[in-house]
Image (cartoon, rainbow, N blue to C red; front, side, top):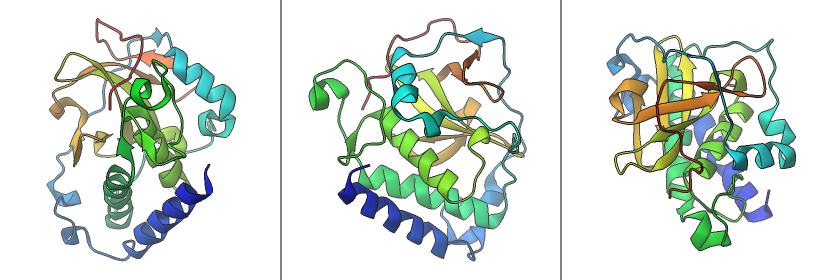
Length: 210
């Protein structure tokens, strides 16, 4: 990771840590406001996004799966405050730009080392930071959807004891998966370095969406 962005990430983590003792009502969106919910239904295996395969070759630790980790995040006020903080800070810190405009390639997944990225880079950086803060990576799954424009888009699904919640660079709101308005296609498996289907019919080839 680039030195400049690494300093930014460390600053974000320090900021998130200061929130650990805060009660949830300190956030505009509170933990208490989340409905009790169920997760998305897994319908079998799915083909990974090609750029994710390359990402895992280049960032093996980011794709490693420890089945000894919890499969769900227990949402406490402290954990919720950390999630809200990291989500907002990454959305603010990273400049949105498509891979085509930025790197002259159709789709590339990375950790926005130069401070610029598209949808999946935001979410990968959020997961990196949340894992550094102690949340189980196994319960944070990269997810491919079709967005409101009918385009491929990547979000981060947090599998929690309050259902599946979605972190998105298009909004700071953290929504239950079925309230995003997106068509859910597939996400990383919790049991292997692989992908599983969520039932969406049309699967995008890329997630090249700012």
